[in-house]
Length: 115
Image 1: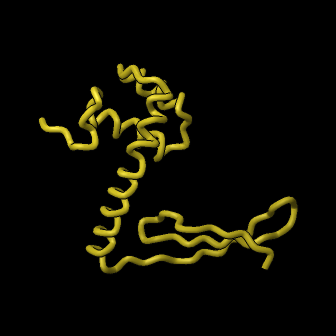
Image 2: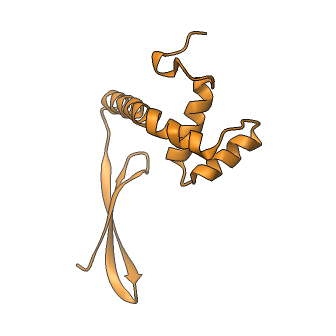
Image 3: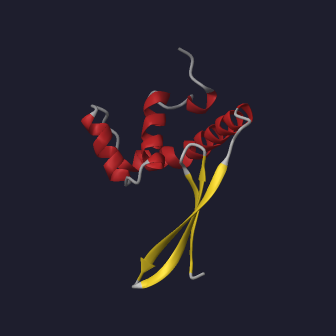
């Protein structure tokens, strides 16, 4: 198996690096939590190593995700989004919660206003 050039000088496999970085990015986990999750899977890496990988490879993975997402959106020509309005109470006062939601149910943006 040949390694991509960006992983050339790392002893750890690209799959493990990707897993660690994606766990940290995708879920609200701390670096130490990612370290613990990897340890449970038999992978011994320190939280500082995960932080280094995130700084080094995070932008590359993010660009890859964006590129794939744009390709999917272009392929799916019927991409739609909706705005939902909900009344909520914040500190005992009635507020409006506006949410923009795409066709997959993912919240694109949320805003709370008085009017």
